[in-house]
Image (cartoon, rainbow, N blue to C red; front, side):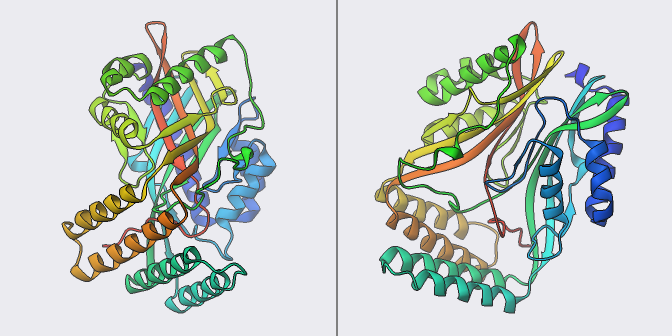
Length: 392
């Protein structure tokens, strides 16, 4: 990875990222128009992903809408945003750079407001025309989670992931791909019917040329491994699709899944193949850019699996055991286990089909004439209050 450790380029990119952090700290809407116009490349392949289902931005107007939603004051969880760029993994040559970081969002939410909002949500759930055990479990799950949240205090800290790719245009670094993702403990966007809305997998635009199709073939090999899920094939698979270097970076869907290096990456692939079910990428619709010996992409994905009631009961036992053996306070353990049990019972009541929409992005580099993945990110969608909160 030495050729992607260009000292001058990384220094310049750090300045760009620091400016980005300062803009998010100030939240000055009067600077937004100029910033987006000057900071983003309009070359084919521009893609900025927010954390929500419909936050796919392919032009500057949509990017302005996304950033302004982060900067807005009303009904907004994105308050104090620390990207932690000083801890970011940054790679760069003379013309392309990419960065990976895990930051925190801080906010203060009053107990009174949280309880009021939950009461209204529960009223809506229990007021549905069709009465069911599912509705009752959903309502009691929300009540338990709110009681857990307010007991943990009014100061909230949520982890989030941020990745970006920058390219150099006329001696100026500009963002060309960007993604925000939040952690989610539950299945906010879980579908239980195979006839789900196909738009959650379809891509609105895709590009193509000889180099791009070469990258698409690598993504297909990646997909083939996740389709077969042959544990005996993992080591060979790693050689086929990943850059086997300790600078390899993989971000999973959970808060603590920042995997650095070969063994950590192998571990996440092994876990996915054993426990995930059918993970499918939209390979044909992937938005791909190639800049000399660096390529990057983003696309939609679906995780489709059948989880039996017996498996749910195993999850309940497993999560409870993990929590009770943690270093959290006894009262905190009880609140977490109660919420987990109720949420899993609610999910079980909805049936055994779990269909989850996702995103998948990454960066490839060329080594000895072969394209290999150096960084990938799997992420769920999350709207509203983030599902994972840091409590100390």
